[in-house]
Image 1: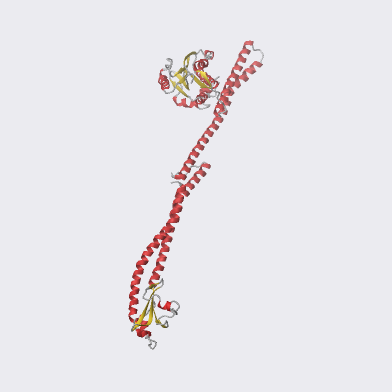
Image 2 (image 1 turned 120 degrees about the vertical axis):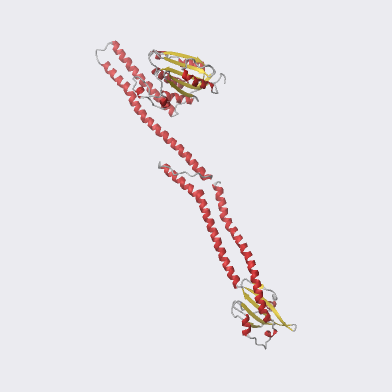
Length: 491
């Protein structure tokens, strides 16, 4: 139930239930009074009738007759009062002379009014009857019977009603207070504790699942907390990466800088032949190019990570673009006497950023050449999903490549496969992490890499809504599969 609805219902209950309880109690008291009044009336009628049997004597109303007060007083009590009046309204006798029970009738209207009628008042029963002698009115008697028991009963019942109503309102108040505490106050306290603990980075109190707005608020706070915690972890990881990047930059640039300094010092000495000077100069240029390549990778990674780099996508013919993309690596491979074999079987168009794709392929192919042994083979391919799997794919990798071909949607697969030492399974996933390198790779002379090749490739491929996969198996080597979407010409 929503909190607003619950509060409205609680307010209505708090307002209407006491009123309803009062009405019910009033009706119950009314019924009880009716029953009690009937019993009281019958008792009073009997008592009054007993007194009337003596008061019907006409001699009591003669002026020359002196009534026996002891006899009349015997008929009365603290609750019963007798008054005698002559026919013209003269007060003859009264058993009690006080303000509460004494009343003088001065007019015929008041004297003769309500004869033979039992008058029921809150405090008493009053019966007034005439007395006749030989057909003539000689006097009137009035009997007043106080309703002491009824008044006491009313007083007691009123007290009971007040107590019951007070207990009911108290119970209702504490019930509403309990529900309010359960529905509103307790969840707010838990939420406040969670917010305080989260702000102080302390363990969070146990969460109690609630419904309604408070439950939704606590769920939203939980979502916000998880988002902030994820952002904190990401920020912490980025800070660790920056610290590692600084260390890696210091480590990886130290070797080429040392080489450049050493060769520059040698060039400054006398006695070098022209050929030696040319060799030293070539080595200095090579180390400078290595540093530039490393810094270019670092700059590209920072741009992709910060989303600063804006893609400049264009539609290209897949055959022409991939033919240009896979060419030009023979001179680099020939330095290590590596044989390059390429295959191109694509059609359709692709929408991509040529500069990013070319930079990605430079990194992947350079890495493949770096880790291919002298005299080994390097395989490059661009194949659409509607062509056959290249025959040169190593046997352990064919099923994975075929599975990529069988997936729905037309695509092109960029394949870079090299012979050499395999990459252990436990570190394959870590290769996508920025700046990750094995110590052997980091200490390898002329590596020219910060360990950003696969990281940049993954970021570029994902920007193009593609996927990247690395497979490695001994004693064959390693295969990198980059999947990019392809469309038909004219789409």
